[in-house]
Image (tube, rainbow, N blue to C red; front, side, top):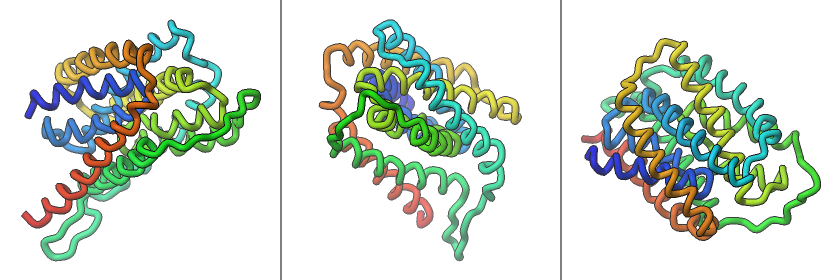
Length: 264
């Protein structure tokens, strides 16, 4: 199972480099199902892996002129605030047992994975059927960017996912960025959110296997290099539907696995 997990870690980097999101939503399921890591701890691991990989990718995109720092920092302001509130105040308040009826029990870990699966399915629809829109290149809707930033921070804080599938459309439709610049800017926002969340977990007293983190992150780096190179050769929009179907299947699998585990 570890070999498959390492292979999928490359896929995380490839998708982050190619379409600026999507790969991070795979990280937690990979850690939970292939490396048997507790879902709550897996969200912290995901923050580090995704954050460091996104940093590397955003630097590569910066070199290509695809990173708008002003917009990235504006967006990150609201998302970081909600992220810290979720991880430091909301997540610790969630009880270990959410619901129980006889032998049927929904735990905090089940809840995280079930919400993750629903998020994956929602994200898959936006990838499978991308909507065309007229983008206003002359104005930036900072209010909408701020509000979406709050939502992204919530997602990142609770699930350890970068939220790139939310960030990319926001940057295109409300900041007037091209697809390539939205990818580069998204990666930098993901880096800021993820690493601040991870540092917050360290301060909160979480302990981690840093050797494992270094190995997985290094593998994801390899995928990021491949994905960034492919982004120069391939239109990421052409690959989104394929990746969307993959995410849809994964989301359905997680729901089935989590519910069936209650009857085994």
